[in-house]
Length: 236
Ligand SMILES: C[S@@+](CC[C@H](N)C(=O)[O-])C[C@H]1O[C@@H](n2cnc3c(N)ncnc32)[C@H](O)[C@@H]1O
Ligand SMILES: Nc1nc2[nH]cc(C(=O)O)c2c(=O)[nH]1
Ligand code: SF4
Ligand SMILES: [Mg+2]
Image (cartoon, rainbow, N blue to C red; front, side, top):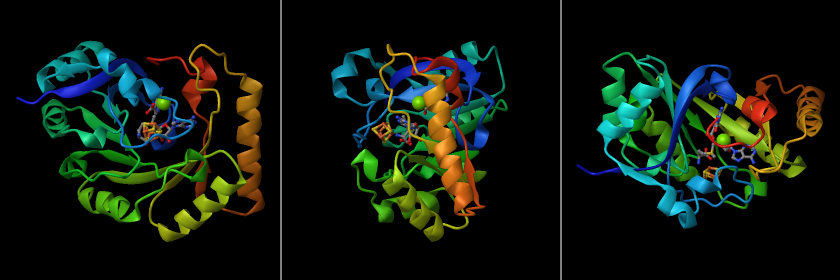
């Protein structure tokens, strides 16, 4: 049986971002990503220099760890990374759903997978200009197509500056049916550097101000709750 490359499995903690904010969840963070966002807060799951820290695990082993951490659950399992869409999480989703677990996945929308249709929530997070990545919208649309049958699909856009904000406005107009979540970018991605809560609040206030000024009433603006609580610490 082929193995999954796993950077870390942790929780239960709360989902700190987006549509499921505040909900208890166990994270399965896969290793490897087809992007290199300048401000990625999870480079330990992206850069192959960390490959030796990633474990090759069978679906059964991943499931065993999720089950142990959640004390038998059920709860919602969040697949993140890196880009989880590089790998086949279908068997894990089916294993968990048999016993009442639900599954969410965070991905940038660059690779479509058939197993998206088996998720409860798919979070697509196309990357704005500040990431220095370029979105392949054909691939993004293929993700939407693959997700047909999934409970719900939402879009979450990270905003660092005015350019990102303007970009997000255009993207939102292109995808009016996707519930939209905006989150301010966190420039402090070093896990050993403390995050200043006042700066987090200032960035949030800046973004809220812009959304309200523009009467952009379909956008929901949220902070990264885990960053407020724990900074960029790993495993929370
Ligand atoms: C680490 S990514 C992993 C999943 C997938 N590769 C993606 O980017 O959607 C998880 C989420 O964190 C967001 N993120 C990453 N770095 C961030 C930062 N410095 N500030 C705010 N959000 C960030 C991403 O945009 C994405 O929504
Ligand atoms: N608590 C918590 N919430 C999160 N939401 C998205 C995360 C991610 O890195 O994908 C994340 C994370 O790493 N921790
Ligand atoms: S796509 Fe996600 S995991 Fe990959 S580099 Fe960008 S933020 Fe990091
Ligand atoms: Mg994160």
